[in-house]
Amino acid sequence: MRSKQLTVDAELDRLQCATFCYFLHETNPANGLVIDKTEANWPASIAAIGLALASYPVGVDRGFIARSLAVERVLATLRFFWSSPQGPEPDATGYQGFYYHFLDMQTGRRVWHCELSTIDTAFLLAGALTAGIYFDANTADEQEIRTLADALYQRADWQWAQNQGATVTHGWKPETGFLTYRWEGYDEALILYILGLGSSTHPLPESSYEAWASTYQWDSYGDYEYLYAGSLFTHQLSHIWIDFSDIRDAFMRDKGIDYFENSRRATYIQRQYAINNPFKFKGYDQCCWGITASDGPGPSTVKVNGIQRRFFDYLARGVPYGPDDGTIAPWAVVASLPFAPEIVLPAINYCIHQVKLTALNPYGFKATFNPTFPEKRGHPYGWVSPWHYGLNQGPIVLMIENYRSGLVWQLMRSCPYVADGLRRAGFTGGWL
Image (cartoon, rainbow, N blue to C red; front, side, top):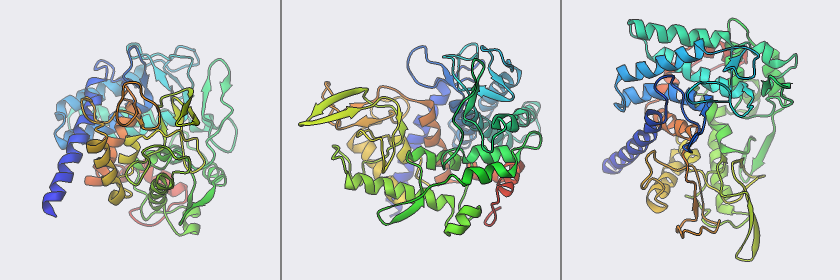
């Protein structure tokens, strides 16, 4: 038993280290910006930057990076965001304390006419706060990290982001104003509302969380009842920073579970859906699952074994209601490791040793694979994405660590803004 456990630990260590290397090599060291995707001339993603900021403490603790180099990287990142242009101009970096989803890797200015993103800013700020808590030494550089992380968080005007509505908008564009969509229905916005509620400068009202929770959909699949969100990542990203086990808001108190248990059930539902395989995709089974927002082989419609199949490119895939085109994202499996290791570890082993998704890849797993799609190059497991994405890499590093040591959860337990936000949202019990 001990020998087997050491093998599992070694496997996780290799995967975590290889994945962390994405942030070492796909970051502009001058400004800390992290490329969204390993395609040539691609921009940075602020969500990937937030995940990098949270990953540097893990890298230091695991010996993947020297503390001095991590401090240098974090400082470059926080200094850039603090001093970068904030204003309504269409080529700024941010506005009202929020930041554009995609930024030029060199200049840090907005690209693609993208939106000022409330959720991706939340991930960025969560990463900054993580770094601010971890780098606690009494040195000028680490003191500056703490000061800048706090200042960046306090600058975000969450009330402005409501646009006079009950819930928070998805974002804003200088050309057209606020986006139509709002953060409603259970999803990855849990961290957004908690950070917004915890602000001491521009906090969300408690009524905003109540309005959000009122849009939840309680559902069931097989033997499981759960709070529905289709893509697996929606049950994971907020949990990177907050340990929701044994703490409950009003909704979860009424249901008799917590959000951690809900994510465990969502993980089991993913596996059961793959076993049931209602659309008869190739490869789906108890070790081959993980349906989430991800890259894909499409867009195309192809006849496969007499069946007309529609394949998508990057899309928020989900279960049990779809969309589903047979594409599996191994990173999303790893990100469920803390919730259900008994079914996740065999799936990781399958992806590494059976499908060989880490072979010849510089950063661990490629984004996705699709055994059903007819791959002309003859890969035995079908189409494999040629890319790595920063948004995929961070959850692997961070959720392996939460499973192994709980490091990120422990750091964020001591963040007063997170604790205040949870209490204002009505959470009680457990570590809180």
